[in-house]
Image (tube, rainbow over all chains, first blue to last red; front, side, top):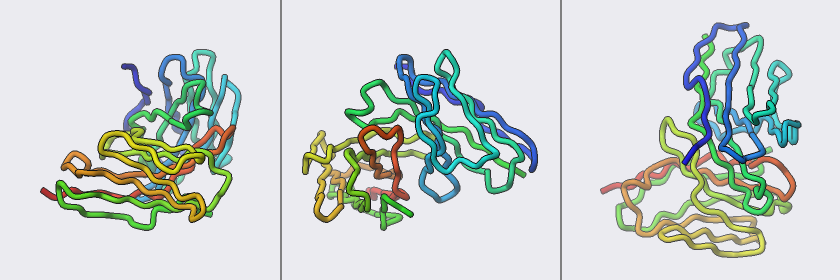
Length: 115
Length: 112
């Protein structure tokens, strides 16, 4: 079965540079979520999109922006990167019946290292 | 403000015995509680969930118990197997909210 696809899997950037992470949800899933997991920490919710509109927002820095496109894939753009942005970034998607189950399907994550 | 808490960062259990992972929450508005399992270099995968209207849900070797008055849930794995060694995240969701709130995770190690 198709899963959530994230790219790139690994990314190394310098401070103050910009990075873009991509996420392709499972077909027919209409909601995409972004989570950030720092070393030894729990996944922190950043932002979610439902039908290409932002549906919820968490602890996403102003330097970050995201959007969901017409094909439902999503991109997380991070600018003016800081050392503290080094983390594993997970994308997840959920089917229309999320409201009944709360289940998210996660990708394998994109590891960003800021030097 | 940590709304979902897993106070045990690690747990070690003998193969064949029962593993009990605990989770506490502070927000009484949560409608669903879920457990995710995470192996290194992989994303979290859904394990089992429970609705706030139930107090128990069982799926094979996995059972989740919910005590709403204590705002506490637990995951029981019996019998524990070496392949169960992973980080387990407790998560909660509110009806209508498009997100999960995660706990800090508990690293479970099953010893042969």
